[in-house]
Image 1 (cartoon, one colour):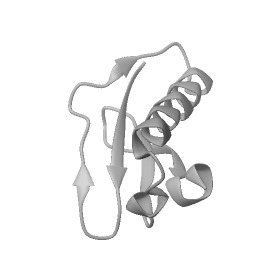
Image 2: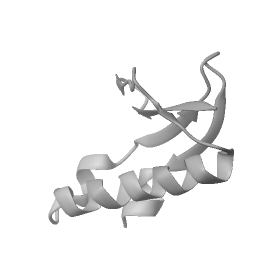
Image 3: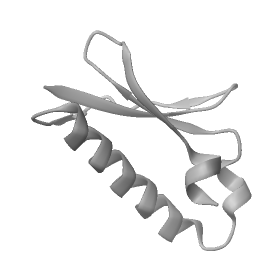
Image 4: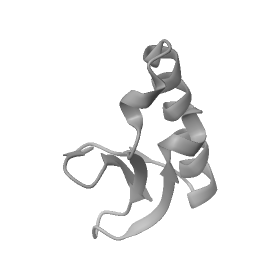
Amino acid sequence: MRCFFHLVNGHEAIMDDIGIEVPDLETAKAQALKAIGELRQEDDGASDEWDGWRLDIVCPEGNTLYSVDLNTTLH
């Protein structure tokens, strides 16, 4: 299954228009946590930069399969 990983808040969105092929939702969740870990490394102490943001895992039809709040995950 192909999943897309969109970063969204109430005002803007950073859309993933490529996505990745994964065998199941659990693998997609693991990839999302990996991506959040990479954001954390790039963040370098400015954790408030992602306040109000979340990462949505979305199927090709546009349905949200899972969401991760970056405030909770990055702090």
